[in-house]
Length: 403
Image 1 (tube, one colour):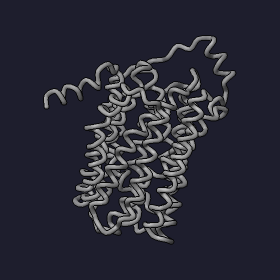
Image 2 (spheres, helix red, strand yellow):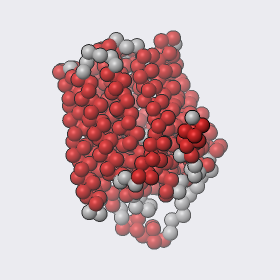
Image 3 (tube, one colour):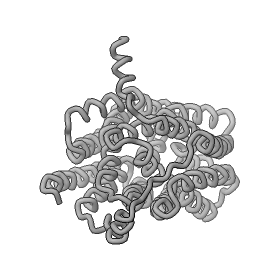
Image 4 (cartoon, helix red, strand yellow):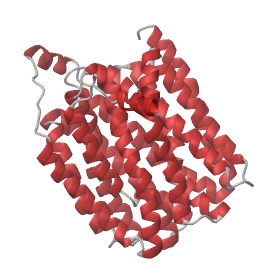
């Protein structure tokens, strides 16, 4: 047991102090974002919106995320990741606090749109900060540590959220979300000093020459399509699945929180050792993305078994392993393709691919559920996974040919 524990700790060796501080700040921030996994339930059950209207509101969530990711990339390349991270977290914290006071349909659409534009400028800036604060050989593990912090926070957040909803109602969650965002940014400002990457004259010239280079990188565009379809599958976890728990199996928010906890707990225990093992095996990023797509596809086709509540655990375990193998390496692939001086643009497109999935996925999924039921939605979601799988085969071929 001691050997296993020591081996687990060894997988974290070599990461910079700044990356550890970023992980701590991310942990505090994500532990506080309790309302996100329950947003669809809050809209449907607490505010009494129809499933179709819930899908529309979540579509605005995705549109805001899409715009915010694009804006975050532009701002990161222009003013640097440090300022973007600070202002994004500060304004997001204030936004979450005020969101609880808006209950009308169009008011929520607009408020969530603006909130997510602000909140998701954070993502490209965070990705670029990891390129600055970590050595090239440690970037995948640095990303994995940040993901571990996110999932550790999201493991305990839903359980605490379920208890708070039952005892205090949803209002308290918005206060906690806002306050923890502000606390996270105060820690960030205190613990991490701005570190600028010196840009040479040659790199500045290259940056001008390489304007919109990410959009000209055909293999990267194939990769972005894969990310989009992976997102269409994965975001069911926070949109349709929590509602399905109640509608099909009458699970409470606390029981849903316990199932979400399984996702985070597995990631905390196994993701870093798995990533460390895979890096030693020298398996290409594109091949690992393909394996992730296979697991994503299976995880939703098995939900067609709808007479046994235990299938929800099987689903979450498969989804979790797909996430653990796929997302660190999609991130690593994006960073590896990014050209010097244009990292913000590359990472913005990466974040935007997932944001676009959140624009299309919730509305389409909710409409399918409303018209045809959950079973048809799971079939359609599985088909998204198959499309991502086919595209990943194409990406592997292109990468081997150095295209």
